[in-house]
Image (cartoon, rainbow, N blue to C red):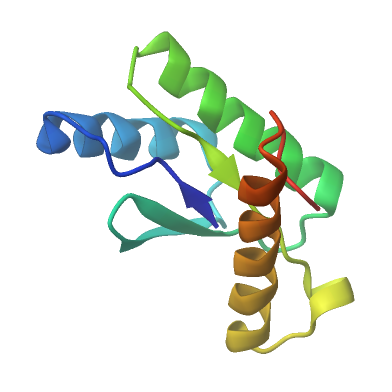
Length: 110
């Protein structure tokens, strides 16, 4: 789960750029959806934590190059450690995202 922050100007332009970035950075088997205001969920099947971090890092880097204003944060959940149920995975990712915000560090929390 990622969050781009709520202080957006020109949301349509930003969402179009984010969509293009996701097409460029995600693999064919991956899926992404806009969860709520500026938050996205990525399903990355068969992906370990390190590879998920690399994919999220590519997304972040592409957004920086496109000069998209962002407050990019993320929380990663894995079926290997957090269960197979979608609710459990989303809850784990949300928990890690909140922890990241609490720590206010420059990297996501696994």
